[in-house]
Each structure stands twice: as structure tokens, then as C-alpha cells.
Image (tube, rainbow, N blue to C red; front, side):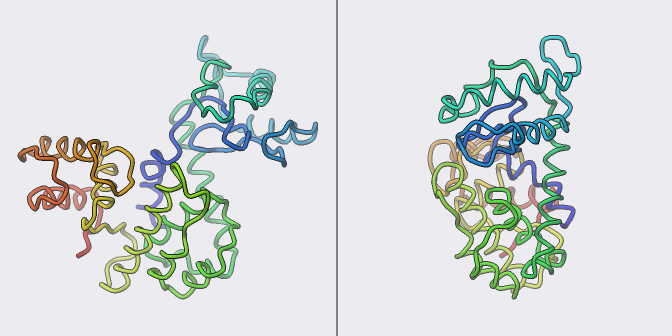
Length: 290
């Protein structure tokens, strides 16, 4: 993948997955940590593991460097197993989200460790994708198309089957791929991911049409969603990246305007604000498309 994709991944994915430094159960009852990193080999969702599935899960969990938050000491394999078992036993808490598990165990991983395992998973997904014929040209794709595809893979796994989408990306028809990249359930953060993925494939089409460099991420500040995303990637908080011009988005715009010395009117399409935002993104390595 292009270096800018790799470097941008954590920031892109954070509002969609969160960063969690303890074990929790996802909505399907699988033990997870980090940025949606599954450490559970139980085949059936929302069910107890077999003995073999538990052992395979513990092998995954012990690949991470856990520590006891009370003592700061490195966790032993037995302590990791005890924490994993304690979390897996609370399938009843899974619908409540990760915060319900925060006080259940004392084991934690550092943010640096989370970044390490996220990058490993990202590379593993890429290696799997490029073994598939439709994705064999992945290395030469526009960075936006790479990131959009990796985002889909993060949500569904790199062996997802979307025949129309696969045919379109294989032939570089990025705008057509944008209309076939949505996956279900299209709700919550998956809805936000679907919106961003679609935007990224449409931007990949701009790269092709305007003969822009493929190795850099491209953004066009022509919508609320694009401005929300640009602000987020620069470190501002515009609220959910949903394409809605609500109070949180306006507050994020005002924060940016104040930071660059503009009147804080909260208007995302203010010409001076868009010019400053484009300049800030360009300084951060982005290409601004017309």
C-alpha cells in the first residue's frame, strides 16, 4: 500500500472503531481489543467456545503485550487466560458496548501496542487481498481506492464477496465501485464507514480523471462530509462524520476558524475557511482536487 495510506489508517479508523486498551466483547460476543482487533477463535457468535476454540483464542491473546494496570507488571499467560475467560463469560454485557467491560479485568495494552497490532492486521489484510485476482493490481491503485478497500476489509474481512464491486475495481472503474461498496448493517458507525468509503472511491475517480498522483490521498472540500473528514484528519472534532451540518460540525469548524485566525462563524462552506482548510490539508500531505 502507499505510505500515506498506512500512515493515515489509525486516524481514519479511530472514530469508526475507537481505541480500547482492555478486553471486551463486540456485538457478536467475540473477545476484542485495540481498534476492533478480534482475539477470539470461537466459531459461533454469542456463544461459549469449545476447548479447542478457547486454546486457539488464548494463543491470539498472548501475542499481545499485556500488563496489570494496578502494578504495571507484565501479565503472565495464566493472567491473560483468566482475563479472557472473565470477559468471554459475560456475553450478557455484549450489547452494552465496550465500556461495560472496562472494570472487569486489570489487564491493559498500551497505545503503542495497539498501533503495532493494528498495523500488523492492516498488512495481513493487504497480503490476503492481493492474492485475489480482482485485487492483484492493488499496489498501483490510487491511495483513496486502497484506503476505501482496506476499510471495507476491516469491516467484513479481506475475503468479502461483492461481485459487482470486485469487477469494477479490477477495471479501475472507481465511480461505479463507489455505488457498490456499502455493506450491512448500514447503521451506527458502519453507516459512517459506508459514507466515507463511497467518498473515497469517488475521489479515486477524480485522481484518474484529473491525472493526479496516485500515491497521495486526495480530498475535495465540496460537501459537509468532506469538510468533516478533513477536520477530523487534521485533529479537530466535527462530531460524527455523517454529512450533516449540525451543532457539533459547526463547533468543529469554529475551532478550526479560531485556530487559523478567521471569524468563527461555523460555516463549513465559507470561502476563506475552505481556503485555509485546503492549505492545512496540503501541508499535511493531502492533494486537493477540484
